[in-house]
Image (cartoon, rainbow, N blue to C red):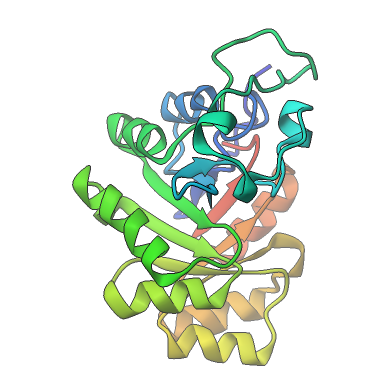
Amino acid sequence: MNTIKVEDKKQTLMIAHRGVSGLETENTNAAFVAAGNRSYFGVETDIHKTVDNNFVIIHDDTTKRVAIDNLTVEESTYDTLRGLVLLQKDGKKGRTDLRLSNLEEYIGICKHYEKTAVLELKNHMEKEDVYTICGKIEEMDYLEHVIFISFDLENLIALREKYPSQPAQYLLCECKEADYENLLKYHLDLDILYRNLPRELVERCHANGIKVNCWTCDDAEEAKRLISYGVDFITSNILE
């Protein structure tokens, strides 16, 4: 099995959703390396804070779906979470390398393969947590290659206060007028569920200097439609 190639992407850039999660267990170093070895522009992932003020890479609020063991991420310690062995793509455990990644590993892989890191700030975070994440990436000399995304507008506002020019995208299932006004107010780009993205919204965003990303499209024909709209990015589990 391999990725599905999309021909003639024009100017649209492809982002690997949770790494190449169509091939490897999502949000693991294996999935990030798989993206690094392919033509993706960016590698997307999700970051949570642990109960002992560390950070781990995982999408869900609990570990049940990816590890069977059911731990609440933000109520668990970093060492406990890192000790879990995750499920393979076949739903079984066996590969001891499949663990929850941490921020430094993820950024290090993106840096090694010269990929843009697309980092989702999960749930609501305190300002200092957002700044701590940024600081860790700055120490690795890679902040200029990171796009932050979040469904939580306050996370992005906090980012804007200290990092006014940092690329950031507001995650939305659909873009209502109030959401669009927030894009303009806080100088944010758009990252929207691809099924709810009409051509007119792409044109409106571009007319105001707003870049458009869309998630999570795994269908090549749908991707061609989005490319014809002129979207800047497509986030996918398997399309390349």
